[in-house]
Image (cartoon, rainbow, N blue to C red):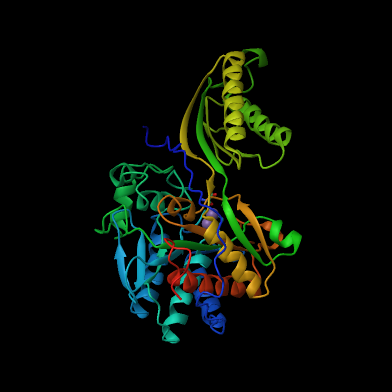
Length: 442
Ligand code: HGY
Ligand code: MN
Ligand code: MN
């Protein structure tokens, strides 16, 4: 199986059971909003970009600074901290016994990252633990908060890499040899920033995993909901396409004699947009990265290297889209007399979260008088990898105008606090829940 042929078919469907929300949910307990907002502001100061966002590409010096800050907070809370062989960092409050209830997300960003994507889920997890500690809550299980390595996949593909290795779906040796878009080897970068840990992967299997994240889309805001009880994550297909044309003089070469890689890349980009519009529903296609060679004003481009990001909640439709794109590439290559090669960077099937966790999030939101909508996630998340090994789910809060992967990313404080309180109650309830029996330990 190639490193990136991750087309692991996956079903983790259990019979829908409704968890009694009354399960030891300590309803009077709430998080400390000022403390959460202060930590979000402090982390946003680490490698800021214009407009209030961040650029902390995975395993760069900037990522290290963010990691160091969050690890300091974990240390201040007296958590036992592990760094594993792919650089995932896990802080655990060792209360109770047995497998922990885990939350977490990521603190690496894209180049135009917002301050909430990933960061919010990690810092809310820290806040939940500190709230429980301060209340001297007696919990039957430990609570862990994790930041996973390279969730974004913007520098090293695939995305959600740290949680993929944590869940045992990729060998760490394979992951360490991945080469970045800038040519660096992942294992070398991990060592350079000092996060080449020794804790083995796959990691400890959590009792349950729940991730809090901004929606990064327009739905919750447009429909007036505060909480999203996430049902799963859509399928993701990333490819790198290399078009080998022929450099030539921009002024002297007749149009009929050109093998123009830039023009062919443009035709492929238009084809993807038109395919997504033709399919409608959940189909999305993006060409996010195009590199031309020699990339000069008066030279017909010899080579174009571009990335295709194609997603759908329905795997069959996603496969149909992939096939259509492959067929079009073949037609383009013969029409334009060029060679076009493709390399699969990522292929993740759609993931369905555990009904018991979905219904727990829903009922806690209801119980807290928060409007809640069940919905799939358009973005990939670490929870989709943890779902391979334990009951997992996610909580969404609205993104203003649905903007993300953009410094203008914003979520109102009241919604951030509401989401963190739903995470608090969810983790407490999960700590008390015995998945092997209908009744729950009260
Ligand atoms: O690509 C994604 O969906 C995520 O932001 N890594
Ligand atoms: Mn994210
Ligand atoms: Mn992201």
